[in-house]
Image 1 (cartoon, one colour):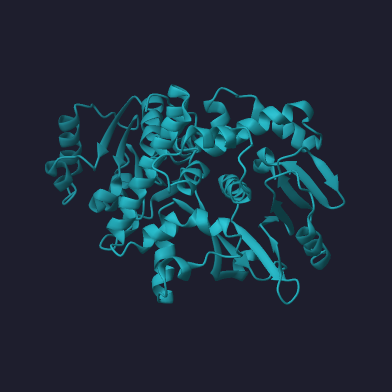
Image 2 (image 1 turned 180 degrees about the horizontal axis):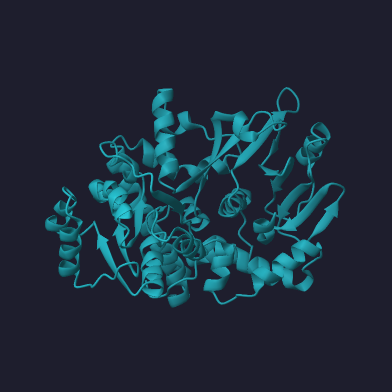
Length: 443
């Protein structure tokens, strides 16, 4: 990757360094190709006098076996400095364990390395092998974990040079005024984010080539990498099938992910295991049905009724067109200009899920029976202090909201206000506030 992107997690890492002063290690986790190594290297270069990065994907057996016995830390540090040609300075240097899941004993050693106190330690880990490779070791309590997601919309705006736009959008949102003539340009940028996504390699490719077909090829490579990883973990292929069928399931406009339709009849315990592995991979976002929104949603989470989204909407768009050898630039151009003759509601729904998750929201939705054959559905249900905010997503300017109206009537004492996210400008209709989808991050 040629371009170093500004990431919000950098500030959290800075806070950790200042507040903890070596008393804990930091584990930066996330899906593969999300930019963990680049971020950590940038942090080490900028914030320390020297640093040492051990990439456990390609380190020698000699270094791996160093962690079999760490009773002599002086020998460990001397060997590492000699091997990597780096001079470590007490309390001014950092040691990075990159892809630490490849060396569980190094992760276990964190407890003693932190207690020693000479240096700071950051680990990176990707996919669920970080969990599968720790069953025989003691997880250090001195380890703090933070999650690196794909670039969110604001980080994407920074990457493409529109640094001020996010602050301006926030002002429009807080003042509840229309974007007016600026809406068209802002929505085009939002659709560009949908197409490119937030995987750093894809964003870098777009900035370098300005060619969406090249970007699509990069995204296909990432998707294939994920599928290979899933097949290594689950040789039956079911894990990969669950991932690949996310667009089809959302496009079906059904109230939950139909696992049986994808992998056939499967034992419930096995389904729970597969879902846990998918969620831990950080490549997907699970949104659970909340059965009783009048109380804490986490307490009323239906583990058997859920929707599944891609953690990156750019990858989602490419997955939706995997039936072709490549996604023709015509498709991308029509999506960018909002002229593709397809119901893109499921694409915008995935986008909103990603944007809400990036702001730290737990994802829940709610359904209830309308009549014998129909159900009401709230796409997303957010908790704000002691109130609820129902959110509905539309892919057009269509501004009816019968489900939200019915929800507000049913739970009138619990609702703060209601939100509809769509492709048109701000509008207010009774309790419902309608915002262009680019403002999702402020809801």
